Length: 592
Image 1 (cartoon, rainbow, N blue to C red):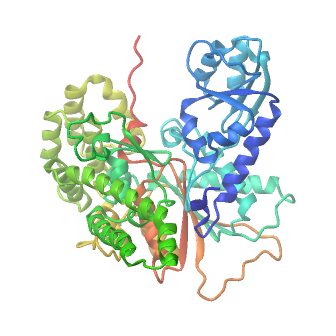
Image 2: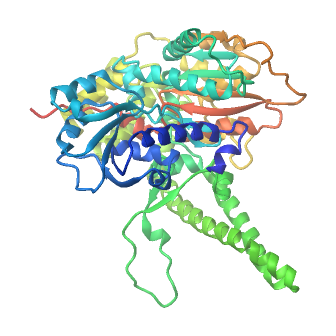
Image 3: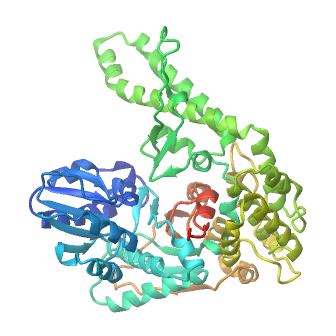
């Protein structure tokens, strides 16, 4: 049981257990010994649902990664392919088949007729005993966090006009309502949000009469399009978890770190070889210290770690005061917990040192200064000399693209000659193949020419208080602490919806892309929640197109506010940062 999933207001273990039950049922369909051939991208998300021990209980003896050529020899009766519905994977599966074994395919999250057609063209469709789908839409990542981990959702929706991921979102929300009750109120902002809400309402009408009689756990669902707030993911996150993700990348709850900081040197071992394998750590609220510091601004982490060190040190000193057998026994029983806390502290002190080396560098500071100038509206309408210097130094292209896109978003587009200048500089320095990427960024609205002389961003910034001078990083009193001054627009909209409501910002909402709307879902009689005095409301905020760890931290901050009145559970199509987000929009021409 993943205990950390049941700590929050909503017990997300129910969702995990439902997913595990379906997996067990499918495995039992294939009687006898089994080998699983994994589409590599799925191994991370599946690891959050089921460990190897569960698979082993159901006669899974071997596991392989899907790659070209024949499946490695394995003395098993069944071979099961766990794959995403991608045509290129079907060609690899066709190469893998070699009788005499029983083959099965499990498509995640949906079956695809196109893929089955491709298998038919390859002449292997009839080799499969079972072709099924495993509906893994929303995966619980933490006690208040769900993700579909659909890496191309933003690209598909905004660049390719493909709404498949929106259909999966609507299906995922229906699964959620089947387990946690109908969500009475739906609010949304953006075109994709409107589509998802429409699909949900249609599905609800189709399933009318087969609804579970469950008292609703969620009071409100807020659907937010990523393109309503294009600025936030471009900015450098300044929370502890956000910076770990920015610098090292967090994948399915794990991070890989340089090993040398974690080598345990014993006295007298001087120049012993250092480990070369990256140190892999799991990051979630099951670890007490991590839950405490992950959402803090990085500048407040040092003090929190040293306070923890004093507490742990004092706890170990207690052993000197243990005199009686009873006291010694009690101390010994606490030892495993204390040693785990000491290891946890050592790990996070090492991570904090690694991050500090970067955040105290001139490069980091200069980059952050320019970001904050753009966010506050300084010189957003002319070519930025810092960006030019970065290009001439041939800094990483993604860094350049993040800054240029940020300038464009904060200026409601760039003057044509400024835009042309940047494009020319980028193409001449990094290669003309990047013209496709620049074109993609323009299509999704990240990098665009100014079409009107009016820039709405300053009005939006002032009305929604998106920039707070002197943000308190140590003891925050506003969500702007997560970016040391900038309050994420997406989270500010969420905050204002709860109190005083969106009617108070009607004019600003009209300046942001896409419609805003409200829908109500009828609840069966007797299922209306009677709220106790002082009981908080529960809102599910669904980010369509990705969410950053800094936004998650800001929403957790709102949940913990004394007089907030609302607790938030966060769901998204993908956990992103500026780098992974821009990367998903990059294209290279195919070689001829």
